[in-house]
Image 1 (tube, rainbow, N blue to C red):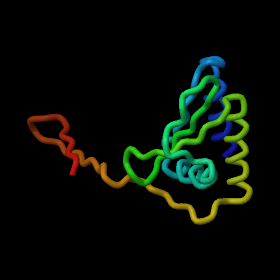
Image 2: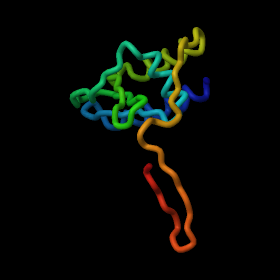
Image 3: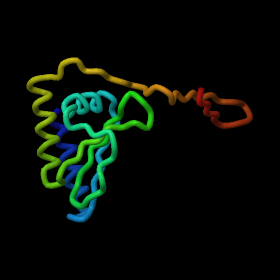
Length: 124
């Protein structure tokens, strides 16, 4: 966990290059990390993207439904501290009733190969 938090710290410090007028978006690729953060920040989740404002970091967390993400908005100055605190508290106290969604409903993609074409994608 320490290495993971260190990697987030490095990425957010690098993202600070946008300056005080920029906006930083953070979106975890792992559905497990997504689920942990969604549960941890459940009282702060926004259903709609916050109005863009300067010096803001927005955490984007997936929901169970396609194109219905959740958002958590931080002042960029405190985003790193709040994310580090979240992972530290998750590690120390755990999370109860965690619901993980590895694949969202409504957008299952199947990949097949055909002799004449490289790849074919089909949405059911």
